Length: 105
Image (cartoon, rainbow, N blue to C red; front, side, top):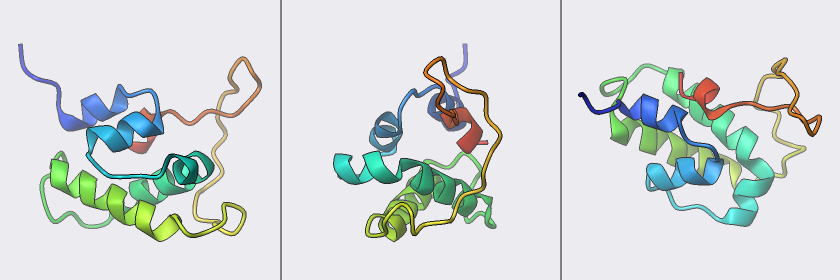
């Protein structure tokens, strides 16, 4: 049986913290907690730019996530209007949910 691709492994993660740990990108939990959607959307945008490596290249994913975190770690969440508004299904708690699999495609 073949090993799952990086994108498949990333899509299977359940939290932003696991995402950062998998790609070995250091983060401050307090910063990530308040800006995770902004950071992950920026990461997604950076991956959409012309690739400098294979689509499943771990270093490309790592560099995009590190750059997104660096760009947004000092910005207040209300000031960062960098992500699109998605119509997402609601969770049982009534909150909108954007799965990590959406951001890694």
